[in-house]
Amino acid sequence: MPEQTATAASLYVHVPFCAHKCEYCAFYSEVPNGDLMNRYVDALVREMGMVAGDLRPRTIFFGGGTPSLLNLRQWEEVFRAMEALGLPGAEEFTVECNPATVSADKAKLLRDHGVNRISMGVQSLDESLLERLGRVHSREMVFKSFDILRRAGFDNVNLDLMFAIPGQSMAAWRSTLDEVTAMQSEHLSCYEVIYEEDTPLFHQLQAGRFSVDEDLACDMHDELAARAAEAGFHQYEIANFARHSGGRMADAPSMACRHNVNYWRGGSFYGLGPGATSYIRALRTKNWPNTQLYCAEIESGKRAIESSEELPPLRRAGETAAFGLRMNAGWPFEEFRRVTDFDLREGWRREMDDLAGRGWGRRDATRFQLTPLGMRFADAAAEEFLR
Image (cartoon, rainbow, N blue to C red; front, side, top):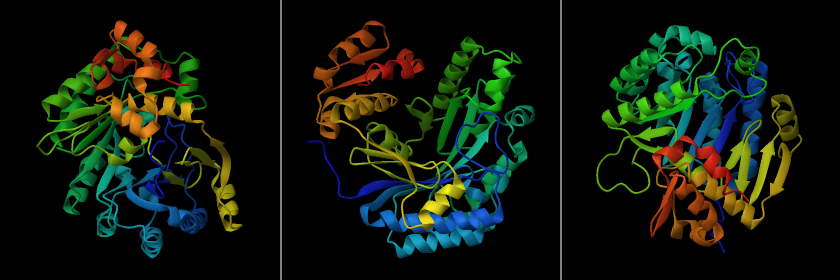
């Protein structure tokens, strides 16, 4: 049987507040309201208490939304609760920040309470494209906030970027890459714009206000990979690049996001907050994506779970295979067997042969992985492994 741990080693917390809803965003979020934010923090603290006995986090990730919108008093309440519940001490503790919401006091508070990694949503350094995306920060705020984080002692900073933005030229993309790599962060996350239904960008696309240039998007990804490598980053997942401190590199560089690697390797995790998903011992649950309903459920003394689903072993293994192929290292056969209790070489031989025949994948005696061409079409490749 696959390994089952008594306690989950990863914790995700969804902070659902954003100063402004970005044009591309399909995540659950809402404009902040002081009373509701206080109510949310109280509910979050109570939800932490509900799962703390089954949680010993090696990685913690506060995402959103914009976690850095929480004020100092609210963060202090969260940290006091975590300490009382025995949750501090994670090897990697990430908080997402918007450049418009980083202050010296907040950066110091986060660092003093064990946060050791910041993921900052830059998206672009072109003012017109930031406005196109509906971002509330300016390019100058990016540089100012990065300096604040460095002075506060953060030596593990990720910068989030987007490419193939409507109206973005290759020249503008190259300019952003030049400036971002010169900042010498430890990690880059770079995503092609996805047109999710019920977002303003999707409706604009449907209305014919712009068109999608797939060839340009592919060229931008190639430019990204080349320039990131020149700047000392190692690609370890479709959209993620990290530095390596030296020595032998295993499946990921030393500054890779361990929290996300746990997702891609099929690990268990608790997700707290409105709309957050948990995956614990084959049971997938999702919280209500509504802050007021979430708070009301927690206040009544129960988890705010909208849905739950127990995944059969084969389906679970197929999803684990699909997610793991997002990583450049692919799946070592023995590790896949340890995690899922299935043999990739037996259950998915036809799929691996098919992808290898198309030049999308390669297999040797120890592992299967996607080729650079296959990584461009990773979602389509991964679908073949689902059961």
